Image (tube, rainbow, N blue to C red; front, side, top):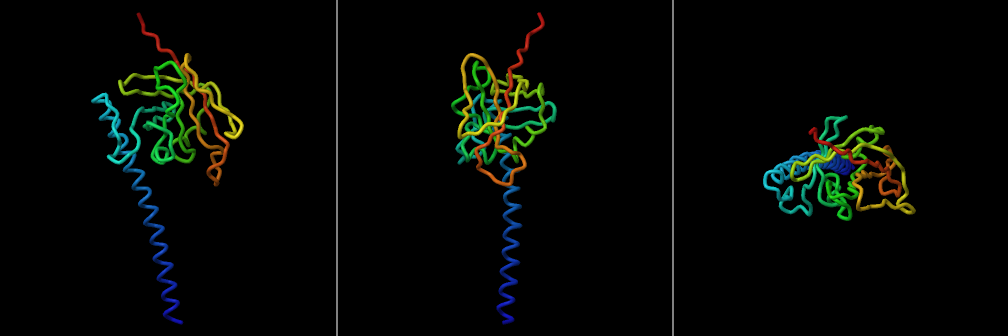
Length: 194
């Protein structure tokens, strides 16, 4: 009976250590990924060629987002697949890139990269930087909660808009629901002083 108790205690300690290691491993992996994503962006800016953050990545860093209100930068990945969203916000392949006169759609998880959206208000700004370091400024005009089972988000050519989308509600313990929090932005036209 003593051996059995020791075995149970040893198994519990080993399991606990496994959970602790996994937690530290996931955090370390997330930090390393952000560093590599930023480096890929900086290399892309220098060469004007999009780069993968690591050799086996199935995405590239394609935009830089700056949130002036929070003094925060976020790097945007090439697509919005589940694999990409695990590491950062994803630019929808069906949408336009900034400066191409159409809807720019970017999505991310509510509890990581787009958690800041709950603190944004009407008229707050976001700046996107493209590979040419061109600045694209947008201002929040509307927010909306949609259900992906019944609602669609339109992507249109002819009027540049930015749409950021994440899961809803922000404080939900469940993942994978159909509700989305959508933030709509209009492009702010910058006029030169001549």
